Amino acid sequence: MSPKTENNRREFLEEALRQNPDNTFARYGLAMELAKTDPETAWTHFEYLLTHHRDYSATYYQAGMFLLSQGRRDDARKVLAAGVDVTGRQGKQHAQHELQAALDDLESSM
Image 1 (tube, rainbow, N blue to C red):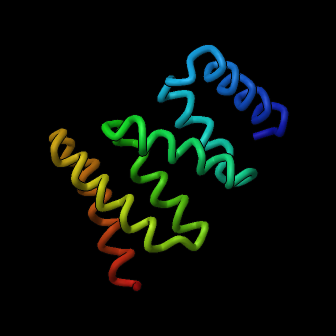
Image 2 (cartoon, helix red, strand yellow):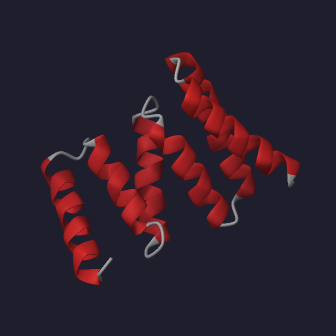
């Protein structure tokens, strides 16, 4: 993907958040966009979702993987475990299984 396309997507997501700071999809997308280029800002968006939108289940896996990529294994474990609980309450078995598998992999390597 070209840098121009990535910048356009980022600008689109940033504008969506300016219009509606509580837009979970835009915030999640922006966190994903920034994960490799601006980890500190990416984490602020993941953290916002984990704090203010605890039921937005997609966040848990990606935030956990992001934390792992940053060497924050204990924090990743906590986020993945919380995601297992959230998706279990929501009845999202597939997502719960993916989170549990990631958590099991992490714990077996600790």
